[in-house]
Image 1 (cartoon, one colour):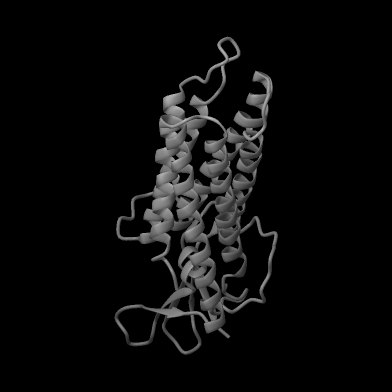
Image 2 (cartoon, one colour):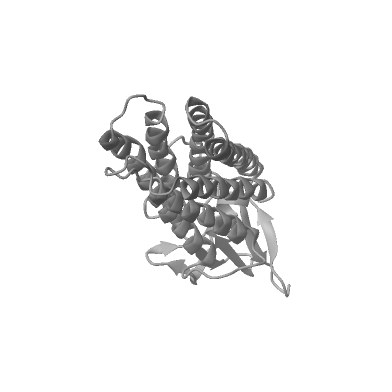
Length: 278
């Protein structure tokens, strides 16, 4: 048994840090993001001046490492394909080529989103009584909206699915202006909004409450870069609205450059995520 010292740090109703006293003495600290990304807690043994990281069991660590690699590579490739699609739209021939590039990138974003959700679902967690994190039976799905890591990754995954509606609709021909805005632009806006919400929750998780700058924390950099990408995606979506009076987007250049730079942010975040592994 372990005795809980108390919860210190959190965001609203969510717990992002938990501190307890193991029976052998000392202090152990669980933090949401390091636990789900690296399977780590920090432990200060009796008589030691500093805390040391302690890994979860081998099964959990191997599982998290595989999921992290899948998610990181998926966002890296997906972001690169989105950037390529925007480049083709801006400088190449518009039409089916760019739409298919976007669609392929969207599939990678779907994969990365679901792998991130699986990481949250299958991460080791502290026991209810304040015990050390324990391995969990593998699960493909769970419903845990009271956990900020689950909620952030779930919203992200749903956002990638909504983007899929946008990308599928962009492959259709002969759409009216109303259909373009309803089937392409509206899902794009919803997807961008969900990405922003997910990024904000991830910032709250890594900062244990109010967003702040944590320059020495790799997790913070990944979240911050991805959130910048979400903002650029939203700017792109706003600029892509087709005006009924003219039949043209508000600003095609901003739409393409916003997508390109936002996609590069997600690709960079995916590369950094490769180093945030167990």
